[in-house]
Image 1 (cartoon, rainbow, N blue to C red):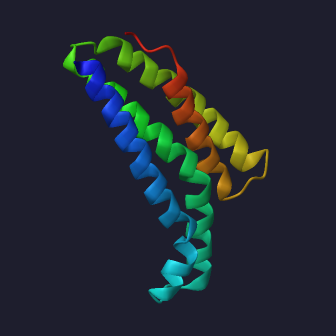
Image 2 (image 1 turned 120 degrees about the horizontal axis):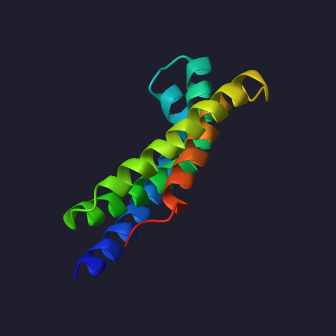
Amino acid sequence: MLGVYLQASIITSAVSSVLVSLLWLYTEQLLIFLHQDPEVSRMAAVFLRYTIPAQFAYGFIQCILRFLQTQSVVMPLVAFSLLPLVFHVRITHASMHYLGLGFAGPAMTTSVSLWLSFVMPQPM
């Protein structure tokens, strides 16, 4: 029965992520419409566009975390959270200082780290 709830929550998360992603695609125009500074609006839009893949991964991870927590599986979750953290710090530093990705770098590395956390073997 919990598996059915997991599937339903993942589908709900995916649909919600699609809807929010559409909003994030038009962030710059929306912020300018709300009389925000155009440069700030542009930078926010760049960051959010590169963060869209992370949004899907984060939603899926949360579904799996709740599924495993209901079964009292906690310790593997800690390990699968710490490993991407170490990776994330290093790759973010590299994207900013060595790859020259600028403001989009941290958003991209957030996406990579969250997807890495999602695809790690989940204890089921």
